[in-house]
Image (cartoon, rainbow, N blue to C red; front, side, top):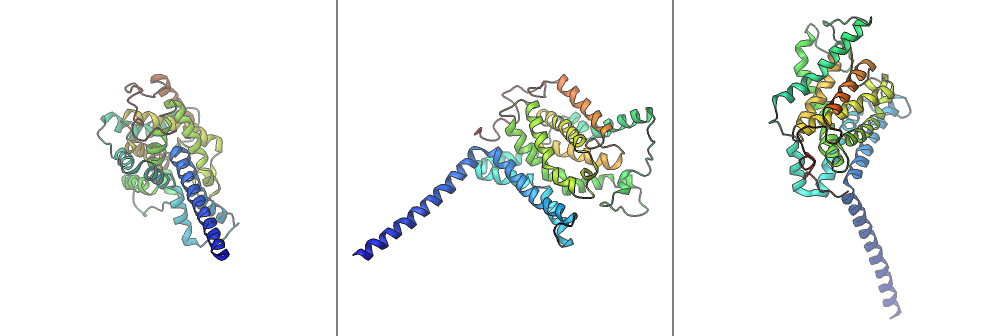
Length: 322
């Protein structure tokens, strides 16, 4: 009889432990679901910093990694915003949220003007900055030998004019570089949620700051553009570009496709012209002036002349749980 009571007591303890464990997991999921934006940033940083951190440590001889792992780790780490957005969306909003998430990626029916803006604004602003630099006595630029020729990660075929490869590089860079791995997360998930709580300018600055800090591991990986860039210059350029991304997003019904094209155009322009709007002070100053003009010409509340507060692209994409 006493043995039976002892066995029952042990079973009760084990059952209570299982219930506590289950309740703990449920509570964690409730926190995740009630704060999806926080969950997204935590996952993004965790995934990217873990993998890119390993690459940075290996580059400085602090750990030893097989050379065959360097590219996969760098690639997966650099697209951390995408799987984080997919995971949080799937677990907090279900099929409806996933459909809304993917719908943004394929919004292409927008005014032709916005295609011109996203594809050519970086080159136009860069050329103006180059002209101003030349006027002030800066170095000349050899258009026959753009910077992409000297980039070690991009060995171009010998004997081919690099300008003939601009379209293939644009497509390849979009798929393997930052745009495809970042824009669905930063703009498709985070910007939409941030604009549910803050003004468009406020959301842009918050996201721009978090986006800047996310790049920290790249500053310690030789060969990246950030590794030779002063952090303040890069931060200022990223904040300015974040404002312009929101401006584009809010004028194109929340099209992540358009922000993808804009991000890609910024990158390809930096490969073909000698000033970058991300990380060289002349280009960053020029882009800051463009961002300031956009804020003045539109409205800090929406960064758009067309949309009312009830029509912002973020509304309805995800439940307002924060």
